[in-house]
Image (cartoon, rainbow, N blue to C red; front, side, top):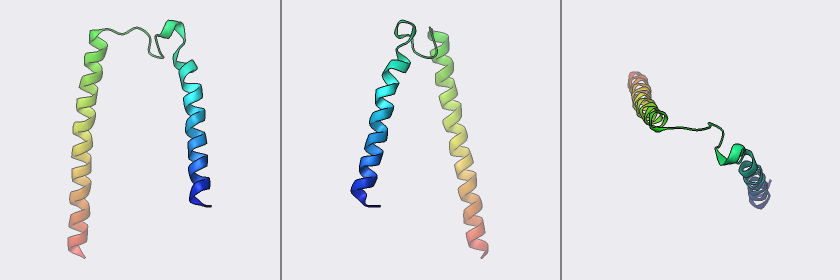
Length: 74
């Protein structure tokens, strides 16, 4: 496949997604998919993000250390 064809397929897919995203998120008076939220919800989401990125760094660092050890042993 040529690059122009791949680009046009990806662009068409993105346009279709954008066309269907706005009506899907505009239900119930524009509340969105979660519904009403308050400070507690936002705070818990922030804590979840902090925990996720901390665990992501730890897991990727351990994986890199294991790969380095494997590369050194050969």
